[in-house]
Image 1: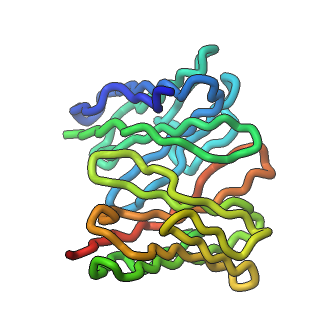
Image 2: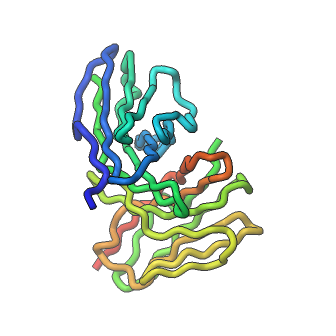
Length: 113
Length: 114
């Protein structure tokens, strides 16, 4: 089975721009969660989508948004980028059955200049 | 508010030794406690996980010990190898609300020296 894929792997943007990141979950997984990883704050939960519905949202400003498509692929969008948004953005997929195991992708490294 | 506290931040262990990483949580509603391993340039990978109804779980060289009354859990890596050098994260989740949000500790950078 193919793992979680994220595109692009690296991205450089300037302040004020917006960015869209993409995540394809493992086949059969309908839950997709997004996390932000920074050296200072560690891994922080952004949001989870299941069956195209946002189930939970972390403590991030409204500039961070996401969506999920009918094929379970997910995108997250960050508008009006700030320097502090530079981070590794990780996507995790889960079957959401008897196990709570979340499988992470390699991440998208976003640098905001 | 940091709900999962992890220590130490960094750890150096001789090859063949035991690596021990500790975590403490605050929210008694947490019911799932996984450990993740992350190598540079990669996403975290699940190592082993435990639920509060058991006190210990072992998978190969990796063991989780869980103390529900103390709200603490730890990862033991037996016979540590240089290939185990990575950053380890403990996490906790509460599945009752219909979402599986993982709350992570800050991570422990493990270096296993030959």
